[in-house]
Image 1: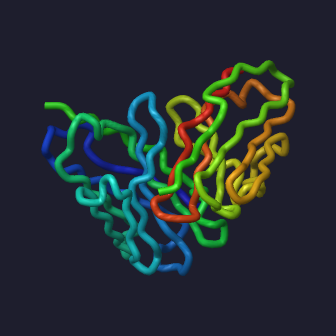
Image 2: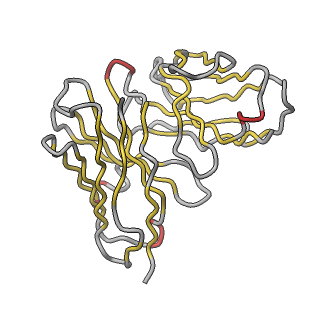
Length: 121
Length: 106
């Protein structure tokens, strides 16, 4: 059974860097064809895809946020870490990580419960 | 970037109705189109992958069709638990793009 869960601070000050960890079980990100994605949702708004790391360590980002995002995978710990620099009020959102795989055309089939981050001084 | 346009923005059907949500892509995405349901305060749930494939455990009253640029999600015999917001998402090209959502208020 695949599960994912997001961890990180609930409150971040403007200009700080957000670091979120996605801990997962039930799969290995060394397995060919797999990926973990990050998605966020500001309060009352639509979902926004942020970033993706593939099993082969290929990394992709939303162009609008690429300069502020990094994504890394730690296969030994079954974790994917997302960092977002220079946080602002517009980054207040619930952040989700999700599993995706090639066999299903990278549909995000299992999601974590999400973690809510508020940016405020 | 590919733009995904959903319609309608919202709808208020009755229990037992059939509803159809559409999703239009700004360019051909083949069948790299997926549908999600999100209920208040919860993570999205995958309903349909690759345009027409029902995710395991999803009731058969949900169905998806389409290819290329035009896709539909149909819910037959709408149930009270089907309220929520529905999103389409393309995975044909990076950046992955999601629609703006369709709110179904039962």
